[in-house]
Length: 253
Length: 230
Image (cartoon, rainbow over all chains, first blue to last red; front, side, top):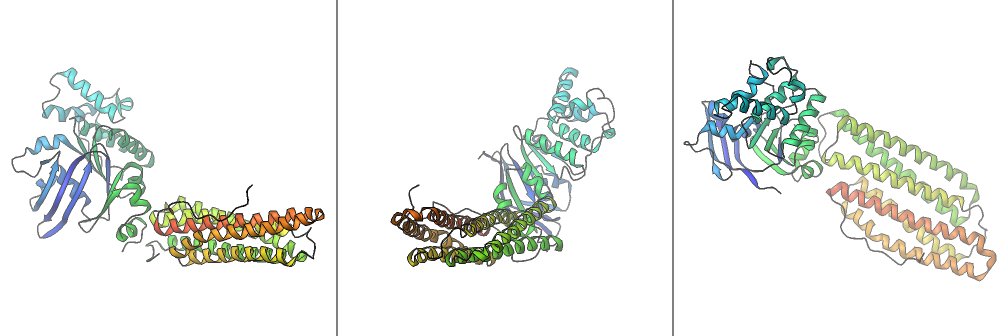
């Protein structure tokens, strides 16, 4: 078992009056993939959005409890959110490249974070990031073309490359394959497997099969509560909790 | 299973698979009873019927295989459904093997004389009755998802070993009395051994049922009775 990278303790999240997360205690291990599953609205996306404080942008959102990364509390008001998001990258459900060239999509992050001061340094970051995202071979001859001109699967890998470009420690993925076809999905999954050697990955997915394929640990959320968490193999073969079983076998509701 | 799947057709497919295994089990049990009966009564007229019933069992096995493959592809079963699917596959394999052994025993009736000694038949019958009871109990534990009962069957195989030993000894004793007995005694030795092997398949089924119910295999090695050195 790897070291704990992210630790949530009694995490509660409210959107106005509505409580979205209830006392979530969850440890995420370093250089491992953790999958979060559960029905829509169960709080799994809310949870990952806490890890890079994306919920800060929602006015009515209130967070209590703790989230520690490497033992350091990230909900601290004095913490620099920009540098937190440099360490914790995010990939969303729909690929959302900037309306810029492939090159600019990747170089944008390093530039604003003060990395890659010279053109050759930036070139190197762009090449490495695209290579790590398994996209380099497909785009190396058209780096000046718009990122939005790529196929869906390529755009998603571009977004992963963009996340990687600032050299994060954690990558959050919110249903990264739900808009992709099976081949593009397979490529992303293979990429996740490769990326976990370097990064701590948290993935929200509605596909059970995907959770089984890509993750080492799985957490099941329901109505804002973390119902069960454990080794992925155990969760899908023989979960302890009846609600987990009912959900993964399609007996819910 | 406590409550039903949201997708009704999935529920039906799984139910249909389990029903197929239960039907295959009851067919295998009748065939075992018939073949045992044929051996004890040296009833040569029933041989063909028993051999034919094995075809039925084999057909069930292929049908169950197809059902399982469809389920795996269509539904990608998880947790209890996955265990249910996998254990159906394993149980149907063991049932088919038991069917083969019953058929093999039925074939051995042909060369047997009608005047076999009572004691020998008695020992063989006791073994046969126990194996039949074991099969009945294990199928019962499958239908009722009864972990304790399946485990009991698993442990009781020790008695099958013991009765096999006794039956073997009486066949060997019979054989040593007169060399003329050599030919059909060999068949009786095989028939006895077949029953013991059927017992082993029944313990496999018990293991599959325990896995199905609790999600883990029975730990340790099961108790063993006396065995004839081979």
